[in-house]
Image (cartoon, rainbow, N blue to C red; front, side, top):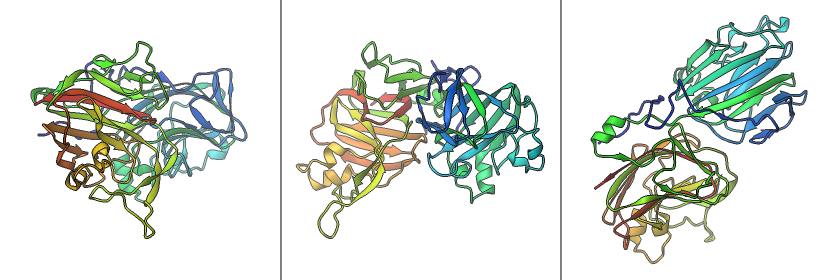
Length: 419
């Protein structure tokens, strides 16, 4: 049964804003650089200012589908850039994508290539040389990044519309154009450029609302609130806006978010993505039979990964957790059963993913979980990673939980069908 459309676009969901009228939130508090990392930038009169030492200033958060609004002011001859899908390391023009921020009329820029002027995707796509105000005046820019589509408006006029998929095919050597998520960054060159009124609206992947409703599914996240989920009145770590249920990755009074309703047999479908970077950690390599791979001297073999961890608790118990994480084994495994030495070998093997089907960190994933009796099937991004795995002793009914385990994570399009 096909539940979701694969196309990436913004659609209007009940309780969610549209791309034309989104709920924006600030990325800059106009006081300090909270939420940003880097050096060589200061805050002056409510604006971020690139100093002569300024190079990269990077958001702590990662973004995928979004609208970004900001104002900028150039000094004469200034050069800076907006990093899109930046992985947090390397030259943002190549490991990510750089949209130029440039004083086009400056004499020293009169012989640049077309893809080097303001608004252009550096070396990839040229913007129209229109609408830029003279140095010293404030400009307003909107950047829309929806799937592979990038649109840039400058002072009310569209100066660039590009398809990253097409550019990727044209430039297979460019690593950044292959990415579909990452940090935002100001990519400075030491010239004075000021930024203010920086706001963003994020969006989930589209849902075929009529299709899932006709198939008997019910939405258990309304896209705009925590209705239907247990939480404290002052919960701030979990927020809902524009169809996304977001955890900011910080400790809070409400850790895991439990459904108010209990469920038995079900199919649960939902989207999820990691919304910020995490520290690196050594994690074990898991073999297909569910055991940990050992080195020649008997030690557990480990690899370094970002320490990203969350999951879905089923039937009211954390033992029944379908993992969402960055381990090499991939998401979808049931850790509580795989790691239980008292379980038969066949059970431990069956709850071990057949393949790692996760999207690159920061991009949206889609998962379908079907639980009938004590049998579990998990499909991740179209790949069946568990099939008819047994969970001996699982309760007949219980609540569902979205786990917070120290990593920033977004959920969206959460639908359920009771079987």
